[in-house]
Amino acid sequence: MEVQKTTTEGKSVISDTLKLTYNIYVKGSKKELTGDIRKNDEIVGRFNASNNGIIGFSLYEDNGLTTDEINQSFLKFAEDVAASF
Image (cartoon, rainbow, N blue to C red; front, side, top):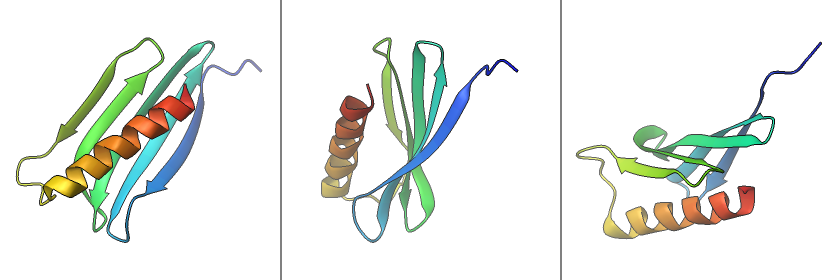
């Protein structure tokens, strides 16, 4: 059997109510990371990154995040991406 793609799930906990959930896909030398920003287990945004340098981070309208929570989410996402690639 030839493995076509490997998928791994992950999670980073920022606070009791704020989490980042990840799906990490690896196919050969290509690596992609996608995920959700969750507040109180509700999805309030999404993000993605790949080892070719593409990075995306978006928040839903009326997401309920404070400025500090937005900053914490983005910084944790950036740290996790740096550690993954």
